[in-house]
Length: 141
Figure 1: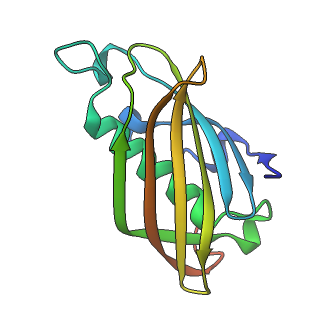
Figure 2: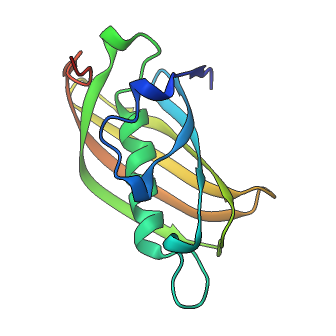
């Protein structure tokens, strides 16, 4: 996976504050990012809330689905389906997100993603299908 760093100003446009990912790197149909889970993201047991995990999976896969290092070639993506496997627990810590396209065509992309903790332990995996809109539709003027 060959990824390029993106300036934060170019990607912070629509992420809700509770799901704001950082250090986004894009490749063709692939993306990585980090997320700092804090006390506001935890459930009553002190573990990362499943809804936050689902939102992070959707965010990283949406970035990856139509991703390209050249902004003129990016495609905005809309989630059609999302399946998540919760395989570990996370707390107040730094998380690492990655997603890549596994197939699709001009209008649809299939993706896989994972979230790991700093030690490399898996927190969740996911599979999704996204609808792709025309190139350049992601860029906000």
